Image: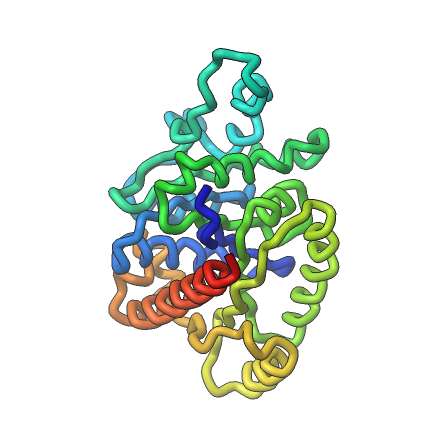
Length: 284
């Protein structure tokens, strides 16, 4: 099975850090500007990324859905999996049936508010997302599988963390940001041992950055001291055109004011993934 790092989640325990905006725009930029095949999985019950991407590709998300969502990942019965050794003639579950095509290179498993019902599910259900992203038919089909997670500790953030080869942490440079980072480490570090995970932090990206402010400079200094290798050089700059783009069904790559910014962030993202994969291959 392919073991390269390609399943990357966008995670932070603190909301309001443009996590979803960054995740959706990196996915779009990879698919359009870098010509990469991308699967986007929306694991945030607010499903804002789904609405953002659907609006860009003129798809509707109504009460009567003609597509499947992330809820279907966790509704797959044990009988539908091909994990029972030679005891059934049932074909393996077709994960492709959960995927909606937005463009030739960008596919999505849409988010769904009903995901919250799994917060009280039986133990073991949190592994279903990992089952999907490690399925060879899915994993070998895409260069990147990106997952947007909720800014809380929950069943769906745990499922996202378990499924990830790496995670990217968007951080707004304010004085509360380190608290969110520390909370994330406290909540999820024990899970690495519990679930025998090898996932890593791909990096920390500053978002909603107002250039040359005292607060941003001070917070960046603190992060560079604590996480010298993790902080991205490129930052998501604060621009009114980003929010206007959400309203007008426009991605950052489509706007001349923000195109260079998201392209540079995405390029650094790909370079970090390649570096991780190079290290993994040397270790084998």
